[in-house]
Length: 154
Image (cartoon, rainbow, N blue to C red):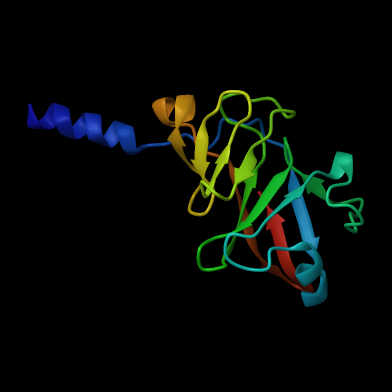
């Protein structure tokens, strides 16, 4: 019985963060000033990037810029460290069904399936079908590169 319980608990802790179809991501903030204008300022700050819709307005998208399958959600975690996720809900798997942010609940949520996600940690599911099936948000890398202050890639 103990082995069965251990396996069951382990299965509950695994999440699938690769449900969204692959789409390239490349968002660059060349300078500190560009980051301060378009990035996340600190803890629990959020920003959406959707190149096809020119979100955010006036962001200097280049020909090489890509914003994933449904767009990119950039957040500052509780310590202000930036994290990035695809905006597409992993339950719905449609580019146009995007995660919204509810700062009162400190979570991301899908307006269609009503699943919620911990966007300030690792994009793990909190409730709804996503939690039942273990579907997490697709995470992207946030780091620096030569001559680029901050870069988001997959």
